[in-house]
Image (tube, rainbow, N blue to C red; front, side, top):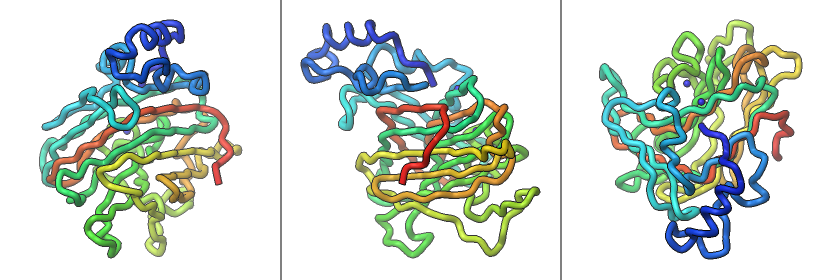
Length: 291
């Protein structure tokens, strides 16, 4: 458990200026990635210009089981978004549904920040099971998967949900597959910091409440590696106004590994899961964790 580089600015600007009324961008405005303030990211994708799916190499896609990955009209940042829809299966199924794609960077893992708009579509107003939606890690190395869980698991009302970070050891798939989000992962808050990275039975996973289901909100993920080069570090997850920081075990993000980010819909139980993403930016650079 590689996304595309931003397109040359002149092309994007010409497309927007000449086709604004046709593709749905308000006249006189630029698409998200074409705006001056969004230039210079290691990766920027708003799914608005050209052929977004065509910019994703087949080798970077993760799609199996009953699932789709489509470009649709956006009610977050017009004109377009990317939609991942997967029909979940029972835990013992031979093939688990997943729809998503990766971005692998050639830079060393000195730090990473991802920002994205996300909508979790429930198809019924509640969350029926676990749902993987994001992956951050290093190849080779372990992986940090992010999942959405029903709030009922921690005594919340059925219309509430929470995020948790899942640590996927290299031996359980690591960053080799988004499917590993639901295969062999452990809540990151329950991973001890010993050399063996064993689970600490007394620790409780840290969580972040999902701001809203069936509505757009902003997600930020930052990774600050240990400057000593142990592959340990600090992970920050923010959703809306809620955030948490978690400690990563040694070896999670080796400094000589290649940073990987994956966006996905990866159900861990038998229900329909739909994740919508828009305005995604990624930067591989040293991080000062946001307060």
